[in-house]
Image (cartoon, rainbow, N blue to C red; front, side, top):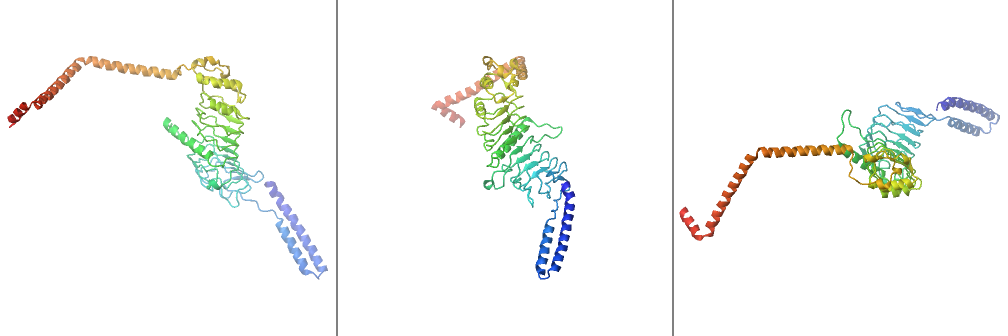
Length: 430
């Protein structure tokens, strides 16, 4: 607080002058009334103590790699390659920026300080290469309301990261805004991940985030949740079950293919649901009924590849009647080809059939596969035809071998069946 520091010395000098003047007056009074020297000395001592206590307290120091503003109660430690949270953060901080660093791991009690950071309400850790956030990492920030962990390649997010280590005994967190955009680890430069590797990574991140959201009652007061740009294919069934106060949910720019198993029933305060830029093909009756039952919600569904077949009938009917979908006139068909770019709200239900019409890319693939199989079959038949004589001779040899083998079995059977032949055979052997 530069202004406060500039006025502080002047105010202190004024108080000191007043104290000296008072001492002079007290000395004159003590001289004029010698009967009470103890009283006058005690009064002067008390006045000196009060004057000393009136001096402004020294301001808290700012960590060396950071920039601090006591007036704005803000601390910025941005792009400093820090590997740990600074130990001497000033207790007046309400907003702390730790972006663009090399933190890697956020252990339990990462923000434990003396005096505590009781005033800290907003913490931005985006882009700090965080890979692990342990249980109780934020338990020493009782006033934390906004937390941004975006653009960190998280591979471990403890289910109790937003609560105390002993979650059963902890009170609900004060956290009201949680931002977890783009927490997927990017592939190394010049190297692309295989599809199965991407799918395994997505599933692990989805399960990890779902477990953190539904653990205990730590996030019961959360009203804003951002999970954009994470390539989620789905969200676990009960991922939102412990967020009754949620008002803003951002799931845009993921790869969600269905909302069938995701329940919105308990989100009675939900006001904005962003589902743009996903892979949604249709919304089924259960999802439509849950969304329609939310009193204040506005839903955003732009830029999804809607498939306009017989499964779209209920959604088309719902879109025509509902008022909760923002920009519903912009929603258009992506498949089949004959209905591409047609607006959903203007579709004729009689035209929505389930003919096995495939996208052109799949049609081309199947045609190519058929041609390859036909060529393989033709080559096989040609080889059989060219070797027909050899195959015929081979078949005759097999037949003769089988016949000789069967005759030997038949001869042995006749000998064993006739006792006289058996004895004759035995005598001839002798």
